[in-house]
Every structure is written in structure tokens, then in C-alpha cells.
Image (cartoon, rainbow over the protein chains, first blue to last red):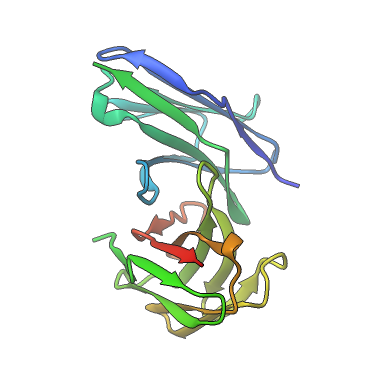
Length: 108
Length: 114
């Protein structure tokens, strides 16, 4: 059965720091990965998608994919209190499978 | 435009009631999904309609019944629910094919079963 694991957290970083969120996946043939942000009581919001090995940058967010190590990460630079949320890693192979999420708190 | 709408936002129902959740998208997507999310847990897939074909998560009880009147609308009919069915119910849609098949979520319906 396909599994996606995230560092469980919670993770706290000071404002302005880099937050690093990590995820591993079990299905070697998976090709598509997504990071969603979910504020408390709200629905998941797409942050980034990544399909190729290497880095993908979008503003303060950088997603990294290493297919050999079956590892996906999300870096948030210059973290802001508004980034405080749960971050969900998801693997699309057949159906979208979510990790358990990492709760991030950015301290002012 | 990546908007998926859901109604109602909140729903309180008794165990003997019948109610329906509604979802709509106007992005031309050909796949729509229902997820259930309990507190501090990730979303769990319940049903998928892809190109008007239904796929079911076999662990979902029969008291949940999906309906897809057309490619833009998705309903979830609820009957004889249990208190443990209280959760956030999320609808999502996607193009329905390709490795970049991104799912976009609606705001959800917060369901409470008394």
C-alpha cells in the first residue's frame, strides 16, 4: 500500500527564518507531488507541484524532489506569521495520497 | 479561475435525517472528488467521478451516496449517519488525466451529526 510520511512536527521557527518541511514516499513509480497548505478550519490550498528531480522555486517557496531517495521537501524562506498552518505533502500515483501533515508555527 | 464551490458551509443533522451536500466547478474539469477529513488528520478519499465514471473507496459506508448530475456538479447524499461521521467534507476537482493532474479543493462543508 502506497505511503507518504512527513516529519510529524510540530515545527516552530522564528519570523524571517527558513522553515524546512520533509516528506518521503514509498511508491518508486510515483512522478507527481504536491504541497498543500491548510489553515485551521479551512480547506487545503495548493502551494506547489513538482514532477522532476531538482528544485522548483516560486517566490519564497522552493520544492525539492529526489526520486532516487524518494524524498520531497518544501523550504519556506523569510517565514512570516501568516505561514503558520499545517502543510500536507501528497503523492499522485493513481489517487492522491496525503501525508499526515506538519504543523508549522512562525513566531513573531 | 480555480474555484470550487460547496454548499452548505455548515450542516447539523440528526441520525434519522436525509440531507445532501453540493459541489460545483466551472473549470471544465472532468474529475470530481469527495474527501472526508477528521480533526488533525489528512483528507481521506471517499469517491471519485472521472469522465462520469464512479470509483468508490470500498471502506465508505453505504449511508453515503454520491451523485454526479453532470461534469460540473457533484452531490453527496447523506442518510442515517452516525455521530462519528461528523467531519469536514471536502470536494475537489481536476482535469482528470496526466501526471500534472492537480486537484483544487472547495471550502468544505462542516458536518455535525447529533
